[in-house]
Length: 104
Image (cartoon, rainbow, N blue to C red):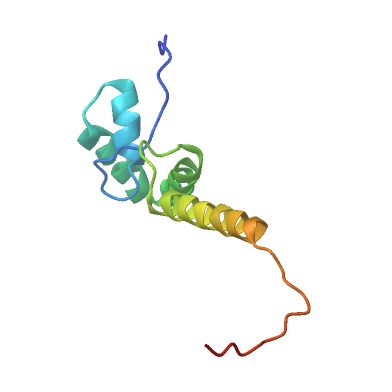
């Protein structure tokens, strides 16, 4: 099966984390079909732990389509740190300063 350069991404139209939607987009099927498959596998007693574990692993391994909240937060923190570095480089330290009253 050729993938023609496609990559699996988590979907924006998500129920929990977008894994099922992302897999459905990759395989060109409806998301509800993948969700029902995961649900059926999760209900089977001996496969519950395996199904939930696989879902959690897929959440970590499959990157989101758009940048999420945490990525935006990390980018903002990096930008603030770089701004503070630039400001600290531009400051000059003055030593031995004395005050003097000037009267007109």
